[in-house]
Amino acid sequence: MATNRTFTMIKPDAVEKNYIGGILKMINEDGFKIVAMKYTKLSKEQASAFYEVHKERPFYGELVDYMSSGPIVAAILEKENAVEDFRKLIGSTNPADAAEGTIRKIYAASIQANAVHGSDSDENAKIEGDFHFKATEIFA
Ligand code: CMP
Image 1 (tube, rainbow, N blue to C red):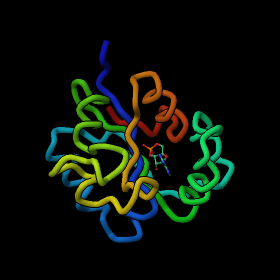
Image 2: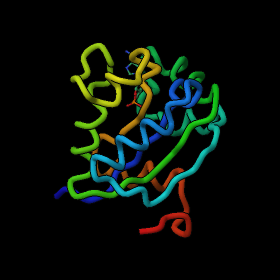
Image 3: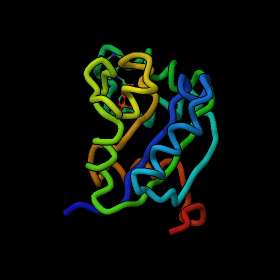
Image 4: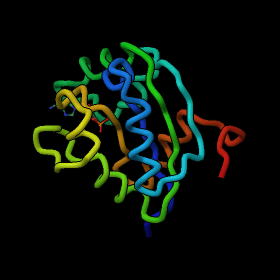
């Protein structure tokens, strides 16, 4: 059954280009409530651990370097059917394939520097949210 939370990161490329405000506006206007948020920078160790599921992929090393290259915004978002609705809002991983009006279509630069992360399942949303936030940092 779908839960009502997902996890996102605004990635280093989008932060660098000053897109934080525009992306958060789209998130709020789509009906998501921000229940936790942090402006932070991942160490290489943290980025490696967060993306460990991709460690056999050829792009893993570059992904870890990129995700630890500059500050990010991490957030937990709440809405009914959050995981699926957020994946619709952000669009395909590769911005070249992303639908018009999606966050990645508007803000992403490439398949790697794709502006935002969105959890792909309820289970991962919980794991990823817990990776970044303590219970006392979540305001439901
Ligand atoms: P994300 O949704 O955060 O999940 C895994 C990330 O790996 C993905 O977004 C991209 O940033 C990156 N990624 C996925 N596929 C590729 C690829 N083919 N080449 C480089 N990076 C990729």
